[in-house]
Amino acid sequence: MIIVETATGQNRIIISGEANHQVDESYVTNGNWLEKTDLLIMQLEVPMGTVLRAVEEAKRRGVDVLLNPAPAKELPDSVYNGLKHLVVNETEAAILGGVDETELDTIEGLERVGRMFVGRGVENFIATLGGRGVYFLTRDGRSGLVEAEKGVKVVDTTGAGDTFVGRYALDAAAAKKEGKEFDIEAAVKKANKAAAVTVQREGAAKSIPWRDEVE
Image (cartoon, rainbow, N blue to C red; front, top):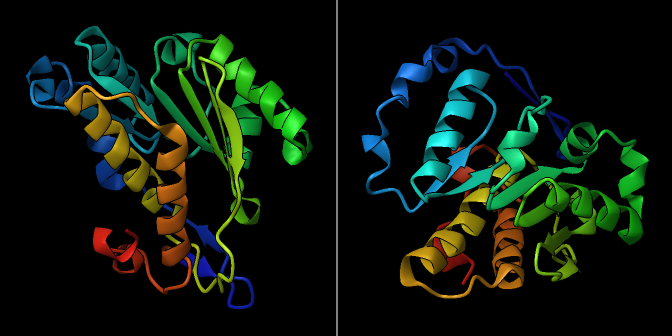
């Protein structure tokens, strides 16, 4: 069930796991499913054992992993070690980082939390901040705040996070496949722009823009 507040476009989602809960470790035990995989994207909506097994197998086979830990749950440090991309919102960053959400109100606080995850082994840390934009920090020292798109009238935030992850992942996978250096700032800007289109439309999947709409 998705409840959208008309005045702000913010949403609350109630999920009955059902099919998601049936995705057990047997689905990822055979590593053949990774043979043609450029990038593995995982959330936490399937059983934790399945997530951990899939991430471990991908790393072992040299497949980059993008983890979007939603809904946020405590994770073992082994998940972060060697993780290519960690994409979180403010709430997820606070829960997983063990800090108060107000810690993320400043650039200094965002940097501290980002460095905490980089210290655990994450290569690229990305925190989506709603109307404030997106913060990124990398293991090699690149960081920045990409401001939110201007003139955006928020109608429905449903699907915005998934849109961001999908557009970001497109650049991440392409860079890996083509053997090019990954331009994280450019990827974040494109993802931010795509998500801004999504929030101006009602619905979930139908609100996600086509690639040619944002390029």
